[in-house]
Image (cartoon, rainbow, N blue to C red; front, side, top):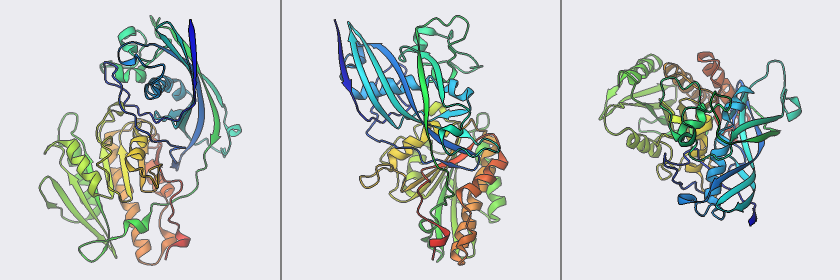
Length: 434
């Protein structure tokens, strides 16, 4: 006999869904109305994703019919398999759903079926010569995606038969969605069809870094902030990324760096503003510990390296974040999809459940290239210094907006869709500056 339960609940869901054996993880309680993305050449939309999934209620999922956290986990995994379909339509899916709007749970024997609706954000490259302010301005607003009926253990069931374009990369469960292709030869696992409906186009107003909050009192009598640059190990030469960022910082700041314990320090002064830039050596110490320490002490934190399909541990330590306003840059593949939700959760407080009052997240909408990172870093730091000196010299109207800084980033790599999450409601404005 079949039984049915109806749940309506909100749930956060991180892409770090499970280990390879399918064990559930704590997804927390963070909720996002949207990721507050602004971009020079991209915009953000909201869509409703509708589908039905099924999974056998055994082992770690024995209580799937009643455990809303595990339901959120499997729903999020299900949505991730629509990534490649939406990429073909020029949308990049944020793999942390805003919320699960409803879930109807049906039990037949040991099989649990969940018919659900979820709110999902996506970004899209700007459309030339078209102002997109509402769904009707888009070429399409309704999509269908063929996805596995059961989103758990897809690789175990399908092997390589439902994957393509993975080249020399090893297929595993946690990243199978990235290479999923339901039309691949020999792909015979049960499928279902999910529907995606664009329901809102978010505004993309001109907004600014919070320059006033970056002008703290420093030891040298000037005002400014501390920046941590954290290139990860290079793929071949472990110090290659470090060396590339060092060369760029030498050029940008024009000062000699001092050698500290496991970083180089640049004290860059212009007018009445200072940015103290610490470039960390990834070959010294444990990189994740260094990153977590930086999150607790720096207002600007900038990463260059692999995203590892959203499984890097650098932003998932919720206790590591500073309480201050921070700009966190993730120059890694598709970091919008993977890491904006983690930063939001880490920066959230009871007073600010979004986590965006105290964070701006520089992210990539598409796969980026490590070689572009030093120049992108330079563009951002130069833009922030221009803004600080504009404020300290009484010229706030000349401070660059995030979109203006984004234009410089786009010149480095036009196809990447650089943007800033968490920034749409930033408070600082040139007209209100003192």
